[in-house]
Image (tube, rainbow, N blue to C red; front, side, top):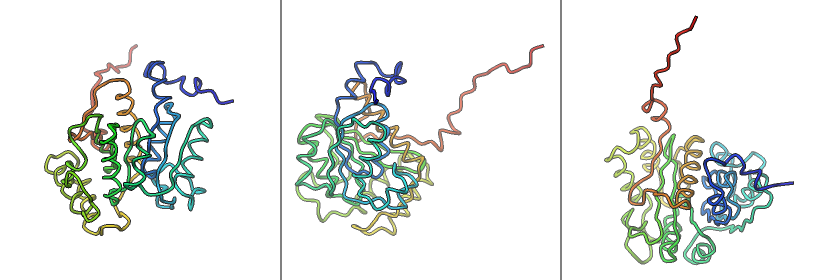
Length: 280
Protein backbone atom coordinates (compact mmCIF):
# COMPACT_ATOMS: atom_id res chain seq x y z
CA UNK A 1 0.00 0.00 0.00
CA UNK A 2 1.33 3.44 -0.93
CA UNK A 3 2.51 5.55 2.00
CA UNK A 4 3.47 9.23 1.57
CA UNK A 5 5.70 9.24 4.64
CA UNK A 6 7.68 6.32 3.25
CA UNK A 7 8.00 8.01 -0.16
CA UNK A 8 9.49 11.14 1.42
CA UNK A 9 11.43 9.43 4.21
CA UNK A 10 14.83 10.03 2.59
CA UNK A 11 14.11 13.77 2.27
CA UNK A 12 14.80 14.04 5.99
CA UNK A 13 17.69 16.33 6.81
CA UNK A 14 17.13 18.37 3.66
CA UNK A 15 13.42 19.10 3.97
CA UNK A 16 11.74 19.78 7.32
CA UNK A 17 8.37 18.22 8.15
CA UNK A 18 6.77 21.67 7.94
CA UNK A 19 8.23 22.33 4.49
CA UNK A 20 7.26 18.83 3.36
CA UNK A 21 3.64 19.61 4.19
CA UNK A 22 3.83 22.84 2.17
CA UNK A 23 5.21 20.84 -0.73
CA UNK A 24 2.44 18.28 -0.40
CA UNK A 25 -0.36 20.85 -0.40
CA UNK A 26 0.97 23.18 -3.13
CA UNK A 27 -0.73 22.80 -6.51
CA UNK A 28 1.58 23.17 -9.49
CA UNK A 29 0.39 24.19 -12.94
CA UNK A 30 2.77 22.73 -15.51
CA UNK A 31 2.09 24.51 -18.78
CA UNK A 32 3.96 22.55 -21.43
CA UNK A 33 4.39 18.86 -20.68
CA UNK A 34 7.36 18.17 -22.92
CA UNK A 35 10.35 19.38 -20.92
CA UNK A 36 7.80 20.03 -18.18
CA UNK A 37 7.46 16.27 -17.82
CA UNK A 38 10.94 16.08 -16.25
CA UNK A 39 10.00 18.80 -13.75
CA UNK A 40 6.76 16.98 -12.93
CA UNK A 41 8.60 13.73 -12.29
CA UNK A 42 11.17 15.40 -10.02
CA UNK A 43 8.36 17.20 -8.18
CA UNK A 44 6.40 13.99 -7.58
CA UNK A 45 9.46 12.18 -6.27
CA UNK A 46 10.17 14.97 -3.79
CA UNK A 47 6.58 14.96 -2.55
CA UNK A 48 4.32 17.27 -4.56
CA UNK A 49 0.88 15.69 -4.90
CA UNK A 50 -1.31 18.26 -6.66
CA UNK A 51 -0.92 19.09 -10.33
CA UNK A 52 -2.56 20.68 -13.33
CA UNK A 53 -1.03 19.44 -16.59
CA UNK A 54 -1.62 21.50 -19.73
CA UNK A 55 -0.45 20.66 -23.26
CA UNK A 56 -2.02 19.90 -26.61
CA UNK A 57 0.83 17.87 -28.12
CA UNK A 58 1.43 14.15 -28.62
CA UNK A 59 4.46 12.08 -27.64
CA UNK A 60 6.82 11.45 -30.56
CA UNK A 61 9.96 9.33 -30.82
CA UNK A 62 12.27 12.36 -30.90
CA UNK A 63 10.90 13.40 -27.49
CA UNK A 64 12.34 10.29 -25.81
CA UNK A 65 15.92 11.56 -25.79
CA UNK A 66 15.06 14.00 -23.01
CA UNK A 67 11.43 13.94 -21.86
CA UNK A 68 9.90 11.70 -19.19
CA UNK A 69 8.12 9.37 -21.60
CA UNK A 70 8.65 5.81 -22.82
CA UNK A 71 8.40 4.06 -26.18
CA UNK A 72 4.91 2.78 -25.33
CA UNK A 73 3.76 6.39 -24.90
CA UNK A 74 4.35 7.35 -28.54
CA UNK A 75 1.13 8.62 -30.09
CA UNK A 76 -0.51 9.39 -26.76
CA UNK A 77 -1.41 12.92 -25.76
CA UNK A 78 1.38 14.17 -23.51
CA UNK A 79 -0.95 15.09 -20.67
CA UNK A 80 -2.45 11.59 -20.65
CA UNK A 81 0.91 9.81 -20.83
CA UNK A 82 2.40 12.06 -18.17
CA UNK A 83 -0.53 11.54 -15.82
CA UNK A 84 -0.11 7.77 -16.16
CA UNK A 85 3.64 7.94 -15.61
CA UNK A 86 3.36 10.19 -12.55
CA UNK A 87 0.69 7.99 -10.98
CA UNK A 88 2.96 5.00 -11.46
CA UNK A 89 5.19 6.72 -8.89
CA UNK A 90 2.44 7.97 -6.56
CA UNK A 91 -1.03 6.53 -7.30
CA UNK A 92 -2.69 8.97 -4.90
CA UNK A 93 -1.81 12.10 -6.86
CA UNK A 94 -4.49 14.67 -7.59
CA UNK A 95 -4.07 15.59 -11.27
CA UNK A 96 -6.23 17.79 -13.47
CA UNK A 97 -5.45 17.74 -17.18
CA UNK A 98 -6.07 20.25 -19.93
CA UNK A 99 -5.50 18.62 -23.30
CA UNK A 100 -5.09 21.72 -25.42
CA UNK A 101 -2.97 24.77 -26.10
CA UNK A 102 -2.63 27.64 -23.65
CA UNK A 103 -4.35 30.82 -24.78
CA UNK A 104 -5.91 33.92 -23.29
CA UNK A 105 -9.29 32.22 -22.85
CA UNK A 106 -8.08 29.23 -20.84
CA UNK A 107 -5.14 30.72 -18.94
CA UNK A 108 -7.34 32.62 -16.49
CA UNK A 109 -9.00 29.50 -15.09
CA UNK A 110 -5.83 27.40 -15.10
CA UNK A 111 -3.81 30.01 -13.23
CA UNK A 112 -6.65 30.64 -10.76
CA UNK A 113 -6.76 26.92 -9.90
CA UNK A 114 -3.04 26.73 -9.10
CA UNK A 115 -0.65 27.97 -6.44
CA UNK A 116 2.51 28.09 -8.54
CA UNK A 117 2.85 28.31 -12.33
CA UNK A 118 5.60 26.55 -14.28
CA UNK A 119 6.06 27.76 -17.84
CA UNK A 120 7.77 25.32 -20.17
CA UNK A 121 5.67 26.16 -23.21
CA UNK A 122 7.54 25.94 -26.51
CA UNK A 123 8.82 29.45 -27.22
CA UNK A 124 7.20 29.22 -30.64
CA UNK A 125 3.87 29.81 -28.97
CA UNK A 126 4.62 33.39 -28.04
CA UNK A 127 0.93 34.29 -27.66
CA UNK A 128 0.35 31.35 -25.30
CA UNK A 129 3.37 32.13 -23.15
CA UNK A 130 2.43 35.80 -22.94
CA UNK A 131 -1.17 34.98 -22.00
CA UNK A 132 0.05 32.67 -19.23
CA UNK A 133 2.45 35.27 -17.84
CA UNK A 134 -0.11 38.07 -18.13
CA UNK A 135 -2.60 36.03 -16.12
CA UNK A 136 -0.06 35.05 -13.45
CA UNK A 137 0.88 38.71 -13.10
CA UNK A 138 -2.77 39.81 -12.94
CA UNK A 139 -3.62 37.16 -10.34
CA UNK A 140 -0.42 37.72 -8.36
CA UNK A 141 0.72 34.11 -8.72
CA UNK A 142 4.42 33.17 -8.78
CA UNK A 143 5.61 31.85 -12.14
CA UNK A 144 8.90 30.37 -13.28
CA UNK A 145 9.95 29.95 -16.91
CA UNK A 146 12.48 27.23 -17.64
CA UNK A 147 14.28 26.22 -20.82
CA UNK A 148 17.05 23.92 -21.91
CA UNK A 149 20.51 25.36 -22.60
CA UNK A 150 22.78 22.62 -23.87
CA UNK A 151 24.16 20.66 -20.92
CA UNK A 152 22.43 23.01 -18.51
CA UNK A 153 19.33 25.08 -17.99
CA UNK A 154 18.01 28.61 -17.67
CA UNK A 155 15.19 29.75 -15.41
CA UNK A 156 13.49 33.08 -14.84
CA UNK A 157 11.45 33.52 -11.67
CA UNK A 158 8.69 36.13 -11.48
CA UNK A 159 7.49 36.31 -7.85
CA UNK A 160 4.20 37.62 -6.55
CA UNK A 161 4.09 41.42 -6.91
CA UNK A 162 6.89 41.26 -9.47
CA UNK A 163 7.64 44.75 -10.82
CA UNK A 164 9.16 43.14 -13.90
CA UNK A 165 7.15 41.20 -16.48
CA UNK A 166 7.72 38.69 -19.25
CA UNK A 167 6.66 41.32 -21.79
CA UNK A 168 9.47 43.59 -20.65
CA UNK A 169 11.94 40.71 -20.75
CA UNK A 170 11.60 40.12 -24.47
CA UNK A 171 10.59 43.61 -25.55
CA UNK A 172 6.86 43.16 -26.15
CA UNK A 173 4.29 45.95 -25.74
CA UNK A 174 3.26 46.23 -22.08
CA UNK A 175 -0.35 45.41 -23.00
CA UNK A 176 -2.47 44.33 -25.91
CA UNK A 177 -2.33 41.50 -28.43
CA UNK A 178 0.93 39.86 -29.43
CA UNK A 179 -0.57 37.68 -32.17
CA UNK A 180 1.55 39.36 -34.84
CA UNK A 181 4.77 39.47 -32.82
CA UNK A 182 7.66 37.38 -34.11
CA UNK A 183 9.04 34.68 -31.84
CA UNK A 184 12.25 34.64 -33.85
CA UNK A 185 12.82 38.39 -33.48
CA UNK A 186 12.16 38.57 -29.75
CA UNK A 187 13.97 35.39 -28.74
CA UNK A 188 16.98 36.37 -30.85
CA UNK A 189 17.24 39.60 -28.86
CA UNK A 190 17.16 37.67 -25.57
CA UNK A 191 19.77 35.24 -26.84
CA UNK A 192 21.99 38.10 -27.94
CA UNK A 193 21.86 39.55 -24.43
CA UNK A 194 22.86 36.18 -22.99
CA UNK A 195 25.80 35.97 -25.39
CA UNK A 196 26.94 39.55 -24.75
CA UNK A 197 27.06 38.90 -21.02
CA UNK A 198 28.92 35.59 -21.45
CA UNK A 199 26.29 33.76 -19.43
CA UNK A 200 26.56 30.51 -21.37
CA UNK A 201 29.36 28.75 -23.28
CA UNK A 202 29.61 30.16 -26.79
CA UNK A 203 29.07 26.73 -28.35
CA UNK A 204 25.68 26.46 -26.59
CA UNK A 205 24.65 29.91 -27.79
CA UNK A 206 25.86 29.01 -31.28
CA UNK A 207 23.63 25.91 -31.44
CA UNK A 208 20.63 27.94 -30.28
CA UNK A 209 21.39 30.68 -32.81
CA UNK A 210 21.70 28.12 -35.61
CA UNK A 211 18.21 26.84 -34.82
CA UNK A 212 16.86 30.37 -35.13
CA UNK A 213 18.41 30.86 -38.56
CA UNK A 214 16.31 28.02 -39.98
CA UNK A 215 13.23 28.64 -37.89
CA UNK A 216 9.98 30.02 -39.17
CA UNK A 217 7.34 31.37 -36.82
CA UNK A 218 4.67 28.77 -36.16
CA UNK A 219 6.80 25.80 -37.28
CA UNK A 220 8.16 23.02 -35.04
CA UNK A 221 11.32 24.11 -33.29
CA UNK A 222 14.47 22.35 -34.62
CA UNK A 223 16.64 23.27 -31.63
CA UNK A 224 18.95 20.53 -30.37
CA UNK A 225 18.23 19.43 -26.79
CA UNK A 226 19.72 16.65 -24.69
CA UNK A 227 18.73 14.65 -21.63
CA UNK A 228 21.33 16.26 -19.36
CA UNK A 229 19.83 19.68 -20.05
CA UNK A 230 16.32 18.35 -19.43
CA UNK A 231 17.33 16.90 -16.06
CA UNK A 232 19.10 20.18 -15.26
CA UNK A 233 15.81 21.98 -15.88
CA UNK A 234 14.03 19.58 -13.52
CA UNK A 235 16.60 20.05 -10.76
CA UNK A 236 16.87 23.81 -11.12
CA UNK A 237 13.13 24.47 -11.32
CA UNK A 238 12.11 22.13 -8.52
CA UNK A 239 14.82 23.51 -6.24
CA UNK A 240 13.78 27.10 -6.93
CA UNK A 241 10.13 26.35 -6.13
CA UNK A 242 11.04 24.63 -2.87
CA UNK A 243 13.24 27.57 -1.85
CA UNK A 244 10.27 29.88 -2.45
CA UNK A 245 8.03 27.67 -0.30
CA UNK A 246 10.72 27.68 2.40
CA UNK A 247 10.82 31.48 2.38
CA UNK A 248 14.40 31.53 1.10
CA UNK A 249 15.72 33.97 -1.51
CA UNK A 250 15.55 33.11 -5.20
CA UNK A 251 16.97 35.34 -7.91
CA UNK A 252 14.15 37.15 -9.70
CA UNK A 253 13.72 38.28 -13.31
CA UNK A 254 15.30 39.98 -15.18
CA UNK A 255 18.15 38.07 -13.52
CA UNK A 256 18.68 34.64 -15.04
CA UNK A 257 19.21 31.51 -12.96
CA UNK A 258 21.69 29.40 -14.90
CA UNK A 259 23.29 26.02 -14.46
CA UNK A 260 25.88 24.58 -16.84
CA UNK A 261 26.99 21.02 -16.12
CA UNK A 262 29.51 20.90 -18.96
CA UNK A 263 31.61 23.72 -17.50
CA UNK A 264 31.01 22.77 -13.88
CA UNK A 265 32.44 19.30 -14.42
CA UNK A 266 35.84 20.82 -15.19
CA UNK A 267 35.97 24.46 -14.11
CA UNK A 268 34.85 24.21 -10.50
CA UNK A 269 37.16 21.60 -9.07
CA UNK A 270 38.17 21.79 -5.40
CA UNK A 271 41.14 19.89 -4.06
CA UNK A 272 40.60 18.11 -0.76
CA UNK A 273 44.35 17.93 -0.16
CA UNK A 274 44.04 14.37 1.07
CA UNK A 275 47.09 12.54 2.26
CA UNK A 276 46.89 9.36 0.21
CA UNK A 277 50.37 8.16 1.11
CA UNK A 278 50.46 4.49 2.01
CA UNK A 279 51.02 4.04 5.70
CA UNK A 280 53.23 1.22 6.87
